[in-house]
Length: 308
Image 1 (tube, helix red, strand yellow):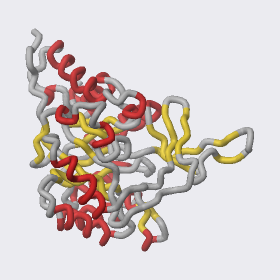
Image 2 (image 1 turned 45 degrees about the vertical axis):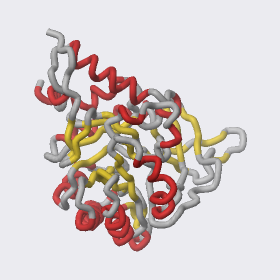
Image 3 (image 1 turned 135 degrees about the horizontal axis):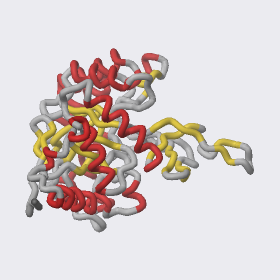
Image 4 (image 1 turned 120 degrees about the horizontal axis):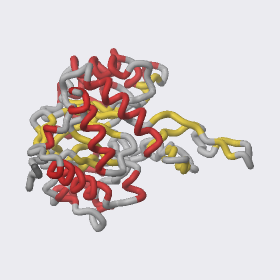
C-alpha cells in the first residue's frame, strides 16, 4: 500500500536532518555558488569545501581531467582558510536554515585540534567532517587515513575540542577500510563518510605526459560507485555508528542502493557539476520510492539488503 508522506528524517549523532541528502565537500563551493540554482533550504545538509587553518593555493594547473564515467582532480585542497571562511563565507550560510557541516583538513594532528576548537565557537556549524586523506607532514607525508593509529589520533583530537557531531571521511586507498572505520569509531567519531576519491592517472598520448600537472589525481563520479558501495557494505558490518555513502551518486536509485547497503545518508558530489539540481531530484526520488513501496520511513530502507 502506498504511503502519502513518508518520514524522511534521519539522525547523525545528535544532528537531526530533514532528509538524508547532503552535498559532498569540494563539489558545492561554499554554498553560495549554487544559491541561484538549488533550493538550499531543501537539502539535508550543506557540506562546504574543505577548510584549513591558513589559505591554500592548491596545485598548479591543469588540475581537472574528464575520464570515462567520471573525472580526475588534483585541486590540492585549495581554500580561503579558516578566518576568511568565517568572515566572508559564513555570513551567507547563516541565512540558510539547512544544517551546515564544515569539512576540515590539516598537516598535523594539532592543526585539526585548532580547527575544531575555533569552529566549536560557531553556533551555525552543526557538525564537522574530517578529511583524513591528507598527508601528515611529521610522518613523512603518510596520509592520516591510511594508518589506523593516525586516524585514531586525529579523531580523538577533534572530538576533544568539538562538542557536536564529528564525521570522519574515509579514504578508499587502503588495504582494509574496516580497520580505519573501527579505529575512528573507538576514538569517538559519531559517524563515518565514505568514500573519498580513488587515486588515478591519465596520460596524454600526444605529448606523452600525464594530463595532470600533479601526475596523480582523485577519481570521482559514476566509475567509482561499485567500489564505494562495496566499502559501505563492509563498513556497515564493522561499526555501529551511522554511515554516509559517497561515490558516483547521480540518481535516486544510486542513493537508495547506498542506503540499502547500510548507509543512513548520502552525499552528492561530481554530478553537481553536470546537473546542479541533482540533490533536489534525488530527495524527491527517495520520497517517491518510499511511497511507492509502502515504506512509512526512510529508516525502513537503511540496511535492508543486508537482511535478505
